[in-house]
Figure (tube, rainbow, N blue to C red):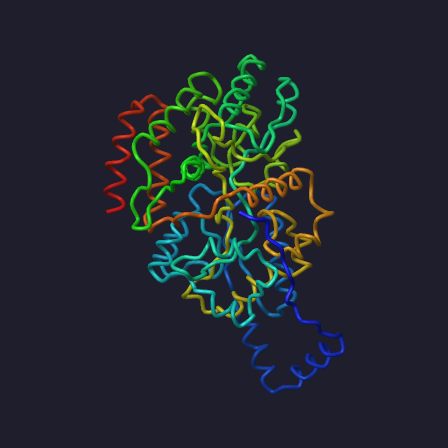
Length: 443
């Protein structure tokens, strides 16, 4: 993917014009009724993340309230585990949030009419995307329509504990490292620590990747995708066998922790990276500041390994891509859609909000906003931005978006990894069961 350039289409407005317009609105007989309506307005905003993201989002909400007198914003937040189930329950009960992040099943929510289409708001200028990366916007459309705005640009990555690498005398990887190199470094760190620190967390980390997105990186190296355009699996048993075998062998060699340690992860704060049990953690890059806030050791963001020239999980192209997990949506049944639309524009373009938020959800969508906060971000966030830029330059276009049942296949992938890790089934048996169960899910 070529590196994008950006041109701002923001109109030039003088201070005198703004003041004159404000005076005219205040003098209007409609202003009183509008202000009264705003005084009664109340919205629920929902998201997942760690405490760093929570605190910054709460401050952003307070700023939005200050700019919209009389509006009350309520917050619903917590960890990733269980978040998707709660949102689904709220939709079923008719009390889903007005504005929300969605971690899974966005295609199913769109198909059922739960999420508001945003194309009209964007074309009318209510949500200004003139300074956004157009290629990213295209990749998150569903059925050619836009239902969300990225609340930060992110990609799958590894966070590395630089102290553990230094102590083990293992060199930090470059952006073009391979799966072979990853496995070698993971085993070397475990050996150097005498088994006290594992080289890497496992790929099915409960609060981390949960393994389906990294598997898609591997498939894209070979010109394939997780799903086909008609909603079926886009790969064969041979690819899944190769994938499971790689992780099973690395786990048995001590490169990743045993299943019991991985399964004990209840959130980012209990991940092996933070508890000092592993040196590399596979996760979305948007969690950079949150993870760094949980450890005194300096973290570094790194690309996912690729298969070019690798004996393990080989492939001819760079597999990583900019993903769409950190997006913000509007409930189609919200009674405050106009205010919700304003909130989306606010978190995308408002400079005061940007200075609070920084990169709590990844690099800002707006290139102008990203440049504004560049001097204020932490070293780990700087490395995160470098990874995102590298992925944008190297990634192949998105091949196929997930079908409605994609979230269920993701859960199946994680359960399959667990079955092998806990020794409940062989790789061959797990692969056969995966294809049988996914066939039922997708059909």
